[in-house]
Amino acid sequence: MPLHTAKSQWSRISGMLLSYGRKLLSLNDEALLAVNKHNLNRNVNIGFQEDFSEFILPEILGRFSRSFPQIEIQAQSERNSLLHDGV
Image (cartoon, rainbow, N blue to C red; front, side, top):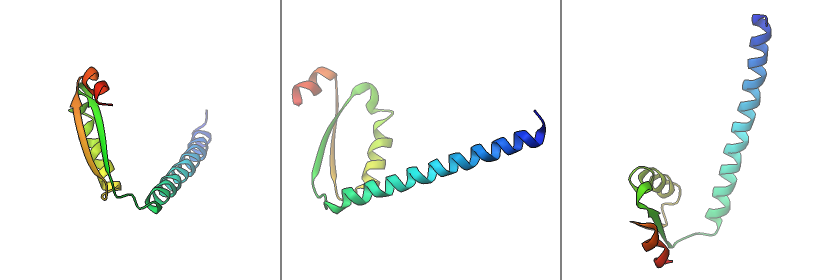
């Protein structure tokens, strides 16, 4: 494939990806506006399996609390059987 053809193809692909990225950001903004309209002011209790809590939990909870600072999160990390009993 000639170099100019490959560059042209990458330009089209880059433009397409940029378009999808903009749509995703727009949809994210729309979802946040919809949720924030309800003026959520409550507590959320969540449970995580022990295997995930050490590696995934800090990032997920950090993102969530930055997006929804008005919501207090109570997180619990246990074995599956104990989490199931708490539901």
